[in-house]
Image 1 (tube, rainbow, N blue to C red):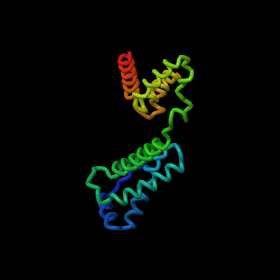
Image 2 (cartoon, one colour; image 1 turned 90 degrees about the horizontal axis):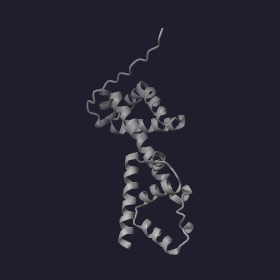
Image 3 (cartoon, one colour; image 1 turned 120 degrees about the vertical axis):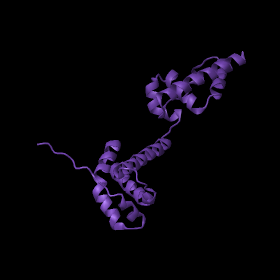
Image 4 (cartoon, rainbow, N blue to C red; image 1 turned 180 degrees about the vertical axis):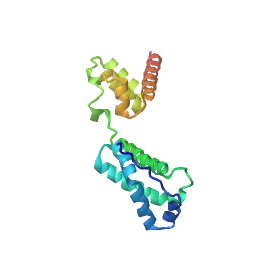
Length: 181
């Protein structure tokens, strides 16, 4: 005998009640829907406490945005989308906070290893024309030996973006080098 989960059916009228300040309607909605939303958040965060925090934020957002609900077709899908968006927003905020410089990654540009002063100055000048991301990607790949896929994870950018920035950076450096000769 297989155990099947009952599909959560939400009456769309509950959002109007919540929008008008009906706290009992909010409690009812929470009791009906928190388990699948929590399961989604837990699968995304892989951390029980983080999933609980995001669940709370989700229901706060649902309560605040109940007046914006327009027959979405499936209220659970609408609420799941809110939960997922909150998770994504939190991840973006965390990644911005956790952006580190090359020095913090241990990826210092080893200009001092270039013995000739003229060569060192030329390389330093070439790196000045690159933006921060281009410098990071080039240093991580050429000087630290990371693969592009690994760099994409580190800088939290798509692989295509990393490759494009790497190639763009190299082209800028080549062009500048030709102009200086």
